Length: 371
Image (tube, rainbow, N blue to C red; front, side, top):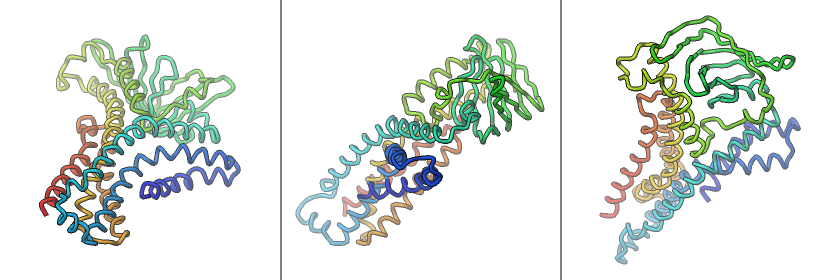
């Protein structure tokens, strides 16, 4: 029941924000709305499953303790650990369900949902340079755009390739613009305050341009560009994308075996840009796996905490569950804000709330079992 409630609440937020407006403006039919909701359900289960089991354990064991049933069970010679074993086994089973949802089903449904919306309100500039993922649709280049607002770009990275494998020029700009010329079938990219680094086997030469422009042939196949953002990729897709980028953007031989401290500032800049992109993918891979263990940690914390709170009221249990969820997801947001800082290892920070909740839950459960 708690999973159903949280699923409904999370779905309601997404439906009101993205789908209801399309329905009111008659851009989507009622059947399309039902399909969109169905595609969103696995995506919101990423959050609804752990929050559901946390709330359920708090409510059940809070009432169990308040009604003195725990005392009766102990008087019958049954230990607390024996009593809670089925709940812990259920949480481990839900970890397996969460893993399937987090790593494969949820991301693929989210991509299908995003593509369905994109088909209703397609923006050609966003289709050619979509935000939040590596773009390899243009031969000889890899692009990465943090934000694309109707052709106005923010935080753009461009990697120019030689023989489709080696990076020879890397460009980064805080802002830029992309325009589509349908008459000539060209994509015109203009970057402002661009920083360039030309790389070869011997050296890395820096440069700075107030304006840097590039003209590319328009990609006629829009659907090829409607691939998933990094944050929406499945675990398998992330792993394949990461391996491909590591091969495509391999460091020059002269830089590969040199300590970071011995590299020139320009070479360090190139290595930094490469590591930022790979760090983002590495973070999201670890995030999907780490989220899969949230159900077990929440169950371990919820059982002894519900016993200690010793309250029958449903609202108290829900309030405590929300506080614990804020703490857990607060660490997740902290790690996500550092996803482009490989030196701080955000892919390991994302595991901290799991370790904290499991350690605290195991300690409290051990104390509760001792009475």
